[in-house]
Amino acid sequence: RKEVEQDPGPFNVPEGATVAFNCTYSNSASQSFFWYRQDCRKEPKLLMSVYSSGNEDGRFTAQLNRASQYISLLIRDSKLSDSATYLCVVVVGFKTIFGAGTRLFVKA
Amino acid sequence: GAVVSQHPSRVICKSGTSVKIECRSLDFQATTMFWYRQFPKQSLMLMATSNEGSKATYEQGVEKDKFLINHASLTLSTLTVTSAHPEDSSFYICSASGLAGGWDTQYFGPGTRLTVL
Image (cartoon, rainbow over all chains, first blue to last red; front, side):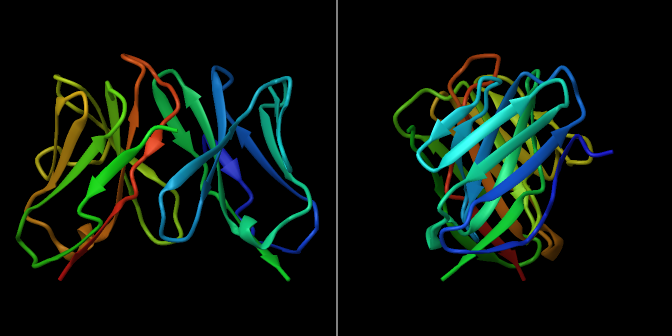
């Protein structure tokens, strides 16, 4: 079983749609969680941190469920510019583990 | 956010040559730097972690003698791909963290696209 698993997609959604990404992790000792966004042929950029209490930034909401070892990212009112690969990132000790990413295509 | 630069952004070289990639943190002291490689449509693969002034810690399967990493200062780390071969062609990305001995938010460089002919 992979340490961090994501649905690879692709997710094809129309503009304005709400889309949710899920991510599961296997190590219960994981202590930090993040979502990164990566555009084609570019480096990953931090989108947001994920906390048990939830974290909202504009149209983006991230949630952590430690009991289920599950992380989610919700994007509301999708924009064309949201098209990218979204990487789930888990930190265990000094080790950073990236998920394989979920590809999102938002269409007009 | 913090800025990390990489140079060069793109390099094409002949098989057998060595290529050096620089990673610089421009506005903060990076006690830890990470080097990743990424193949098309795949996720990042951590190659090694380096702390300033000490030897890099390589991930399993990464050849230390082939991928030489130097982290000589708090703002600069270099990755040298020695005797490059076509299978080394990839996207190499560095990231920097400012928390000594641990992990903080990683800031990524723009990446270097290496093509070995």
